[in-house]
Amino acid sequence: MIIVHDIFIAKPGNASKLAKLFKEAMEIGDDKVQIMTDMTGQFNKVVMVSHYESLTDYEKSWEKYSQDSEEMKKMKEKMKGYTDLYLTGSREIYKAW
Image (cartoon, rainbow, N blue to C red; front, side, top):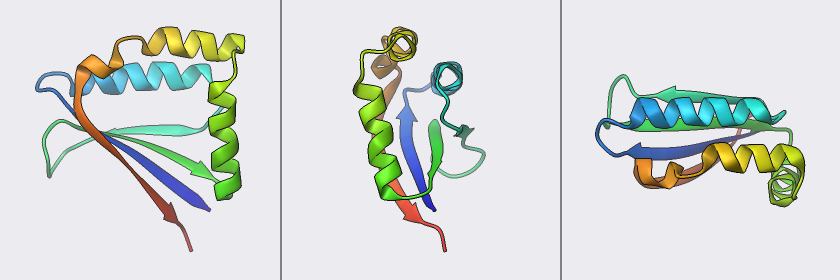
């Protein structure tokens, strides 16, 4: 199994807004995604966690996001302006044993 963490450091006061936006946008699609916010450690951290059976499945999910389907149009509209809510981001990909 592959576990992906998309990590965002939100601008002060925007972590909960960013988390809510991600949660609402990801409900449009069929991917199982968890949204987490920090309780300890670096402030204003929002982590989006997704699970895939393989790296191939992960790559296929990116192909889906690049399509011009009605589902993706709704998601892109919902996500409009999300980049104004965070300072920086990164991605970590893990293999679960």
